[in-house]
Each structure stands twice: as C-alpha cells, then as structure tokens.
Length: 182
Image (cartoon, helix red, strand yellow):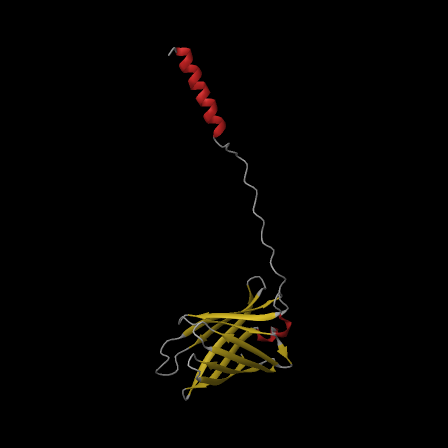
C-alpha cells in the first residue's frame, strides 16, 4: 500500500472512531427531582406527650421503671420517643434502650407506630385515632404474636397504657403501665 492510502485509511478510521465515541460534556447533569414530602401530620391530639415521662409497671412481682423522652423529629413528620428501661430483676440485667416513631398515614387515615430496641425487639402498630380520651393501638407480628395497647389520657401530665400481648401459642399477658410527666 502506498503512503497516501495508509494515511487515508488512518484518517477514515479516526473519523469513524471519533463519531462513534460519546461526547463528554463539561456541563453538570440535570439534577434529579427531590421527592415531595407528605403533608406534616397534625400532632395536636398527641402534643401533650412531648416531654419526659416516668413510667412504671408491675412485672414478675417487681416494679419495672422506664423513662420516655418524646419530641418532634424528622422535620416534624414523626413523634420520636427515646425509651430507657434499666435492669430491675434477675431476668433484666441490662438497660434496654428503644426508639419509637409515631406518624400518620393520610392514605389509610391511620396512625402508625413503629419501634425498635437494642435487644433486637421491633414492632409496628396502627390506630384509627382517639375515641374520647382513649387511643387503641393494635399490632400483628411475623412470629404470629399480636398486641393491643389502650392508651388512656388521664390529664396532660398522666396517662395509662393497658398493654396486652398474645404469643404465637395463644397465651395472653396483660400489663398496666402508668406514666407521669416529669
């Protein structure tokens, strides 16, 4: 092949390769749209819960203490409760810490509550809302157990929680929890 043919072939291949390669732009890519958050829940019916609460319950013949600190969190979308329950008998020998989130789902028109603790516990409950001074939460869990919490607002500084848990074998345990605002 002659020199001019090699040069022509080389130029042709260069032009073909350059036209097939994507062009690199110095401009920033178009930003992805930010998801629009749901409307913030109306927490006015549960605002009295914001603050620090000292709670007690009788469990295995002993008084089990618990401290709950509740605040608005996550940009006002959730009521967040930090729970600390110290050891109180030979079965509970370490402090149990938990976090509970309470919010509202406008699609289902249900209050939703989900929580986790550092003992590996977790759960989700729902409620249709207040009926007078009572708020009933119900939950069904993956292991086949279920729960009901009947929260009764006694005043802005006191509430009770009639808690009922049914295990997968059908055994039900009932506990009354009393909480006072600190």
